[in-house]
Length: 105
Image 1 (cartoon, rainbow, N blue to C red):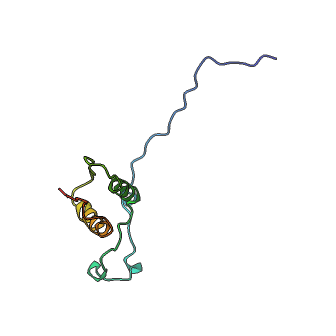
Image 2: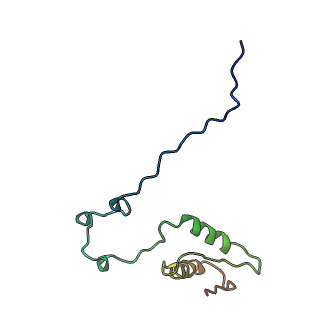
Image 3: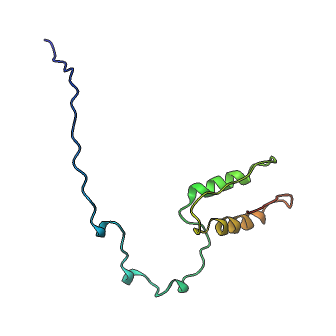
C-alpha cells in the first residue's frame, strides 16, 4: 500500500491581530485590600525582591579573588540599582577582609 506524499506545503493562516482594549493594558489593584493608607506607613525593605538572578550574579562576582574583575549593573535609570547594590555590598563587606575594595560609580 502506497502512502500519498504531498509536495505542496500547507500554509496555515494565522488569525488577524485584534487591538487590545485600554482596560487590558494595565493591571488595576483593589486599594481596599491594602492594609495601609500611604506608602509612608511601610517600613524600609530589608532585602531586594524580584532580582534573584542579579543577586546571584553579584554574589558570584564578589567571590572572584583575582584582580581586574568588575561588576557591571545595567538597567533603567531611577530603579534603585546603585542604592540596592550599595546596601548589599555594605552588608557583605562586614563579613569580608579589609583588603576588599568596593567602588560604586
